[in-house]
Amino acid sequence: NAGVMQNPRHLVRRRGQEARLRCSPMKGHSHVYWYRQLPEEGLKFMVYLQKENIIDESGMPKERFSAEFPKEGPSILRIQQVVRGDSAAYFCASSLTPGHRRETQYFGPGTRLLVL
Amino acid sequence: GQQVMQIPQYQHVQEGEDFTTYCNSSTTLSNIQWYKQRPGGHPVFLIQLVKSGEVKKQKRLTFQFGEAKKNSSLHITATQTTDVGTYFCAGNNNAGNMLTFGGGTRLMVKP
Image (cartoon, rainbow over all chains, first blue to last red; front, side, top):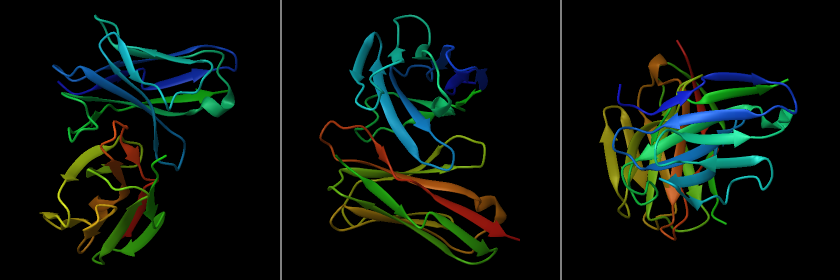
């Protein structure tokens, strides 16, 4: 399966814990995007990364959230000291070239985060 | 910043009826993309429109891009239960910004 992979698919955390979400882009894709989707709402852009670089993090909350896309391995979205409001579906997408310039973004299955 | 709005937010139709969702951007777009998300699923790319006034068809689905490149629509003819899901438009204004998604239109089809 050469699609975008995300894990875990479901994650339950208690308030104050850390959440780590992983995304492996499609084979050959070097552009990764993270989106957050609250229940019954649309997708909100969070961050755009290329290998080892954060290109645009304008949608990322200033505190507790961070993202990386190392040279080797998956992209990681990290949420520290989670709060109930962080409960959402987090989708990763990848593209061959910059996805905002007419290139299709392919979405992973998402990680559903529930904060108790 | 750029805003993309979709209406309606929800639509219930009887199987066999037509359905249309509308997408409006606050800024001129260089291109617009449409995605479908099934309940519990992830967004799946449907199509991209680039040219002013462009119309594309996929079986029962017709996509239009407005002349001013600020609006778009998706029309489904004779809906089927398999059409159930949320349809999102996503636009880019070619200013280096990321794709901005509309809030989606959730389609429910009664058999």
